[in-house]
Length: 129
Image (cartoon, rainbow, N blue to C red; front, top):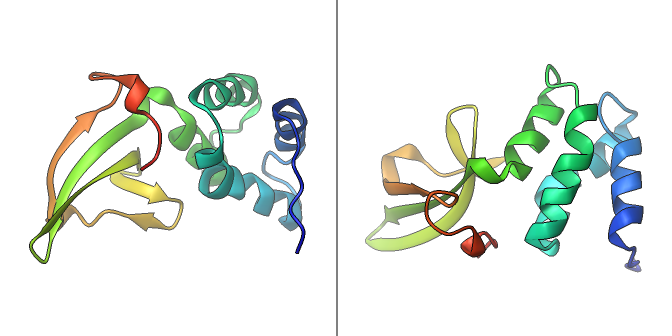
């Protein structure tokens, strides 16, 4: 399948049209903003999209809550975790009390060694690993 490049403002207008509740195809795109396109954006673009869409979100809707958690710069963390003797650091965001790396994947709390807020340290580090 071909890939198409669009500029940030086209992406933002498309995102606005897909805010839940929306038909399934639009809802799927809205979910992709967090899981697929988030890592392709600069921090400035993430901030702009968050500012643009937040007033339009229905925060009673779980998909909107998830977007809000993913793009909120004050909800970003570096999570140090150890599993099978291997220690890693992962950028994550907090959603429903867990540290998520995507909508469907969170870091198992049993393996977390420490968590630090990126806004409390250095927001320039705020680019997914």
